[in-house]
Structures are given as structure tokens and as C-alpha cells.
Length: 192
Image 1 (cartoon, rainbow, N blue to C red):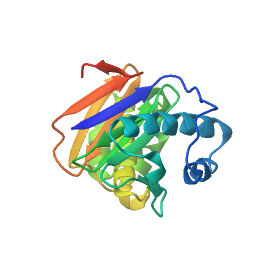
Image 2: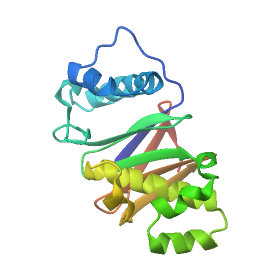
Image 3: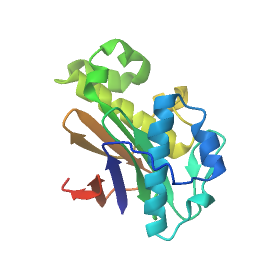
């Protein structure tokens, strides 16, 4: 089971304290990203607590992947949504992007491997295809804990689920078959 929680507004609870290592991690971002990341970690803390986990136990890998013993997690954000995915049973990566960001196709050759580029050339919706592949590669880099790099750009996810939310594409990748996903937007369960 993979649970995805997306939120549409970032409101920071000034009384909500996060662990020092999370603030240290967030301080690497610009002001807008700091605000979104702070909100994201506050929401994550609440959900982890509901599941019996303590946000104080989060630590970060060499490439800044958030880790907590006994839970797989991945965070994402774009202009419309921020949020995270949680799974007790399988490693996951998640990413969300707006298709309008990929209407300019000049990056296609840089982010697609050769076979993907061939499919892209004949795709009816190039922006949709490119957004989906970008999210897939971002999610793979998050799942592997390496971030996006040239090696990740060559990969294709073996297990992938794509969810379209208006102009947004949400992609979840995993190390095993993706059978059950629950999606919550602003804590309301959505049909997918």
C-alpha cells in the first residue's frame, strides 16, 4: 500500500517545531522552497505520528534523501501541490509537475534516452509525454537516493503509476509492483 498526501496551500504553523536536522536541510533552499518544505515536513510529521513514527527519527542520506527506519517515504512539490508518499512495504519515489512547464521541447533530447526520444517524436501530446518522463526520472532519483543525474536520466522505471490532476502529472515509481495506491488531497480521499 502506498499512501500519497498532496496539499494545495502551504501554511506554516509557527508553533510547530521540527527537528534541527530538518531545519538544517530546509535551509539549503530559497525562501519559497523553504516555506513549502517547512509545510511539507509539518504535514509529514503529523502523518508519521498517526502511524506511530516520530519525525525526530528522520535522517538524510549523502544525497539528501529523507530516511526513517521502518517506513519508505518520498517528498515532492510544484507550484500547485506539495506532499509526500508513504509505504511500509516498498521503496518509492514521487514527483509532480505541471505540463505547461514542458511545452518548450528543447530539453527533450537531454532528459530522454534514445528509445524514449523515439516515442516522444511520435507522441500526440509531447508536453504530457515529456512531463511524465521527467517525473519518472525525478522519482527514480529520489527512490534511489541519488537525485537526478546522468545515470538516472538513462533509466526507465520498471514499476510506475501515473496520475493526471488537471495540468499536473503525478508519478510514483517503486522497486516492486504498484498494486494499491490511496491518494489524499488536502486530507480528502480521492478516487484514482
